[in-house]
Image (cartoon, rainbow over all chains, first blue to last red; front, side, top):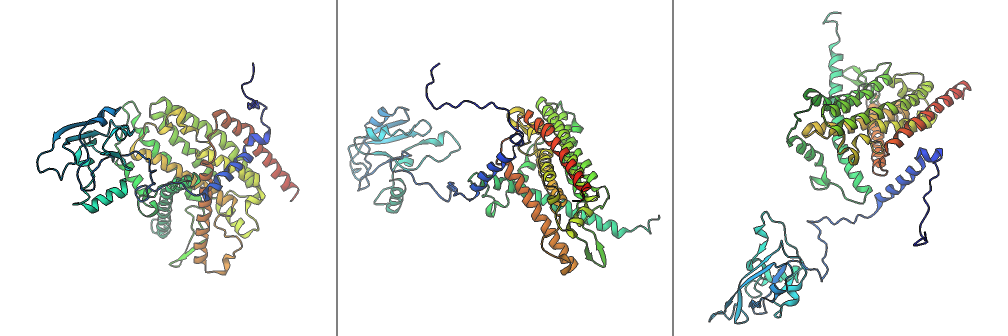
Length: 178
Length: 347
């Protein structure tokens, strides 16, 4: 049979000599290796106190965006729900009424917007599909919850704080999630 | 002898000593489990337990609390009394070794000379051997009483391993006894304190054999075949839960500390601090220094045990038996022969 590579090494089946059977020398060699590891730097990140920096392209929890005046950008067009391969997004559209111009940017808005974080695979296709830059994936991830229901995020959980009325909360959310 | 002529102060003194030794041993054992996890972590570039208390120092207490709070399960098919006896026996046997260990030189308190040794019997080493052999009964009884195939297999392994390695251990000890000429641990240590060298200088091969066999007796990796998870699920304590399991795990650590103490006493001068003349300080201070020295030696040995455990994998069963019967026993015999020849040649 032709050898596939030239890297194969024949197994040494020679019976062990007396000194090899004592294992002592090799054990001491191994112990020296483990001892040297006592002085190595630990790669551990002590999680709740220290957090690992996410990469800017990390795809975490979704955020529903607002514009500079604090109006919701989402028009409930449903393109994100169509794009979603996991079918995690559901929404209900509503028409903007007279006097709600300061709340919603376009004439149509999402009255209900839910993402099931247990279904979501964080692929980011909703972000790509959105024509209004209304949804994007932040750099946080969904925290643990006691019930399955707790993982269905509605509009309250997803909307970014208003940049005008809740300026500090908005800046904070931007700082962590932007 | 009437009750009045009986030296009650002596009995009370010994009782207090026993209580102190047992409690200290248990406390040290508690922190040995913590040390084991820390050493393992550091050798593997991890921080180890660091959440409970400062530097994780209360971790062993949390572990103990967890074990106590667990449900106590006795299998219906198990032999109930033996099932309960097993862990108790393992623990008792491992604690009993401490009786003949000389912890330090005499203490002078309240006008009495207090020997820091529970019993200075002239057959100290034989006693240690008898007790160490008993510790395997805890494992055997527990494994058999569980009425579980794997537990029984593990108990059998423990027993055969103990028998195989006790022979080499005994032979290594005979060579030591040939040079010291006594079986009393107190005399052996005292000879090393007053003499020039520690016994390990005269018996290097004997020490290595003894050390390896002690590791096998303690069921420590690389000889922890009774606990081989991949073959025996969990070994002899598979059916155990709650504090009974805790006792088994604890007994292993007590065993480790006790064999470290024995090795320190027999081969490394016991409470002898090298290059230091104890007669220059007050006797009580000298005794304290002695205890400290012995404790440091014990800690070093325990660290060595842990270091080995986290370095090398477990032996295969045939390797274990080959090493025991074909390497350790011939080596121990050779060592004995060599010692005899040296004594004859008056070296």
